[in-house]
Length: 79
Image 1 (cartoon, rainbow, N blue to C red):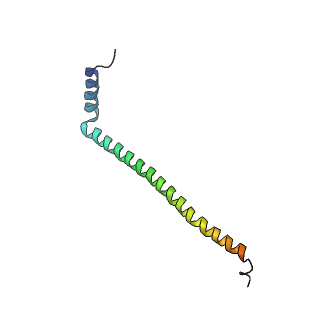
Image 2: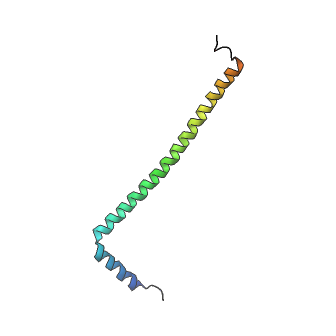
Image 3: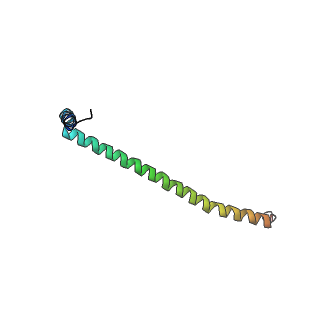
C-alpha cells in the first residue's frame, strides 16, 4: 500500500489551490535567500578565522624579536 501517483497529484493540486502559485514561488524564493545568507555567513566566519590566525602569526615573531633584544641588552633602556 504505497503512495500512488494519483494521491500525490491530488495533494499537489490541493496545495496549489490553498496557497496559490505566487505564494509558493515567493516562499521558495525566501527559502533560497535564507540558504544563501547562511552560506555567506559560514564562509565569512571561515575567512575571519583565517585572518585571525594570520594576524597572530604576524604578531608572534615580532614579540619574540622584542624579547630577544631585551635578553641581549637589558640595560640599554635604562641609559
